Amino acid sequence: MQLLQQHNSAELSVIDYQKSPPDAATLTSILKLLNLNASELLRRGEAQYKSLQPDIDNCSETELIDLMAKYPILIERPIVVTENDAAIGRPIDNVIDLLDRASS
Image (tube, rainbow, N blue to C red; front, side, top):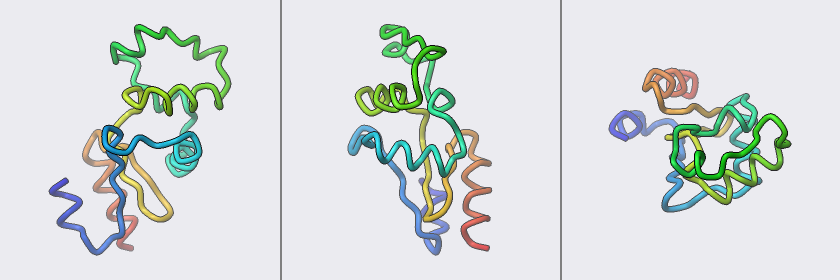
């Protein structure tokens, strides 16, 4: 967060999944910005993931997006979004690169 505050010239949104979980349409948009498919955004180490045991090899992209919308703890985070780009905040270098792209 401190890094983002230091770069307040770039218009950024930090999506806090606990306060404002993204819906399926938002997740779809974020995935496009990240250039990832839904399975790449899943946190497979979460207890909820292990409890649900989704068969991601046989789930459609829509099904996985709906799963993350229903159980936002499954979404890799943090995600930083600019107007035309996004990055997963781990490692922090991803955010630094995003900020550099946003300011150029």
